[in-house]
Length: 137
Ligand code: GDP
Image (cartoon, rainbow, N blue to C red):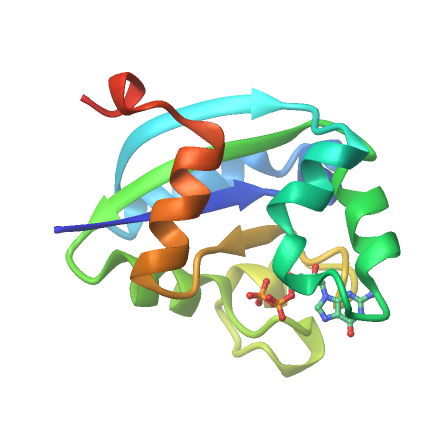
């Protein structure tokens, strides 16, 4: 079993898509181990995306992530990291495969509905950014 951090980003929460995305998560066979609604401050968004600090879109991305409430989840499944990224689709919805969440729900490369960890070490860091060990028992 593997765990990954998923975020239903502010664009999707604002458009009332959280329920449909959670339904897709459950239908795909993930176990939801933890779930929380959160409205990030700009500082908290900057901390989460610190790895992208030098990218030209950093200020815009962190402002977007702090623009409204998001839903953060810990998903568990065999091969959960890859499985969740496959269900999300490519970062840019124009390049995302048919049937993926981003193809269906994203509005742009930035307002792309969902986040998923990209490797086991980043998943561990990202999960602990939002959830304490006691939340995951
Ligand atoms: P992910 O792992 O698929 O989420 O993609 P990245 O780690 O490369 O980027 C993190 C997030 O930054 C993406 O999910 C987008 O919200 C945003 N992003 C990525 N590339 C761009 C870009 O070229 N322009 C803008 N404005 N945002 C971007």
